[in-house]
Amino acid sequence: MLTRRQLIKASAATGAVAAVSGAGIALADGPGGAAGAAEEPFALPLQQARVLRPLTAGRGRHAAAYDVYRLTTQETDVTVLPGTTTRMRLFNGEVAPVIRATRGRPVIIEQTNALGVPFSMHLHGGHVTARHDGHPDNEVLPGASRVFSYPNQQRASSMWLHDHSHHAHSENVYYGAVAGYLLTDEFEEKLPLPKGRYDVPLYLRDAKFAADGSLVYAMDGFMDRPTVLVNGRPRPYFEVAARKYRIRLTNTSNERAFLLQLGEGDEMTHIASDGGLLPAPVSARMLEIWPAERQEVVIDFSRYPVGSKIVLSNKLAFPGEAPEVMRFDVVRTAPDHSRVPDRLRPVPDLGTPTVERSFVMSFDAASGQHLINGKPFDPQRVDLTPRLGTTEIWTVHNTDTRFGIPHSMHVHLEHFQIVDRDGQAPGPGEAGLKDTVTVMPGKSVRFKLKFTDYTGKFMYHCHLLGHMTMGMMGQMEVVD
Ligand code: C2O
Ligand code: CU
Ligand code: CU
Image (cartoon, rainbow, N blue to C red; front, side):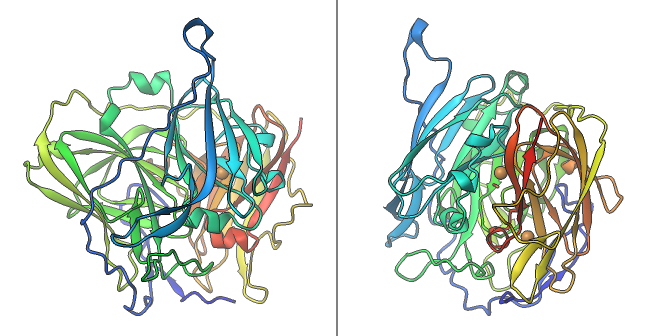
């Protein structure tokens, strides 16, 4: 059952769209204007994502060589829309708390599930062992706990934690159970990019609220989620200094894409994507970000006089929806010694591919399922068995031209390098390492990935969570 309205695939992106799929989407008809989104935009200040502190495991000489955290998923009543209460499913009762980690220093998380549904914590973008990857076989039942170990032997990148349970993941993510996980390393630390309070993670998502403030979830309700939240606040304003900021964007929506424009198309400097820093910065007037993707930009507010207010808006807002995402209010000056170097970080050599695989993503209107290579997910089935140490090329085809459905392939365990989109080299905004890539209807993308370090079972799937719930997931077993 395709209850969604038909998407019109549209507009090949102009050169101005730095990041990405090379295709914006537009919609034939919106949810009919009845869409809520009545909230005043820019009524509330941005809430900065709180950085969690590790539990100390010894001090001085006895300090542990790793950091320990406790994350409990629980139902929590919070105020999202003024004057109302929303029951959410949150990590430690907070909207998108953040762990900051350093390469070479493992993070251990004791995860307790105090929800009424199973939970399976996954580090999206993480290079971790199969046992700690949040495989749906490893669900933590209500009331139970599980210890996760993240080795952090990978390059700096902005990752995030979210549910991967077998049936409740899209709901758990929708109800808010996500956390940021920002890994840094020496290479990145040495660059003169904005740091500290000028390095700001923003978690973007959409939602639908009932009049009493409760969240409304419908699996196929992606066109009727008119409220945009940034770090859990509806369309907030953010008071900034007239200097450069590093803004780390993560799209934690189930299915919404954003095509972000600053002001009337003011320049943003695109510096990083899923797998960390790009080879070189890219000047961007628009920035596309699909579910689960991370895009990072440096914005220089020094070009605006103090007192300026600059709106960040979504050019992919559905008809009838408010396009505003948030507003930057320049309220003071500040010194700035940061700068964006001309070169950032070269992509590592992923080797010469010796195996090619092809993945067809399609919607089956008869069964209402979303399929990969004609099959829905089956936890009993292993779809492929890549060999450790091998480089492969994957081609992902989206054949859903009839309904105009985009898909977004995400691979666990390894980041990949995009080779081409329908034979065309990727734009500079897609030249870095990725772990999630959107393929528009009728299009294909090829990418290269190398299997290193870990064997075992890992997932790959569409990251439009409704599609994943309706079968669009496969399983690979990396073998030695
Ligand atoms: Cu964001 Cu399978 O995950
Ligand atoms: Cu993932
Ligand atoms: Cu999909």
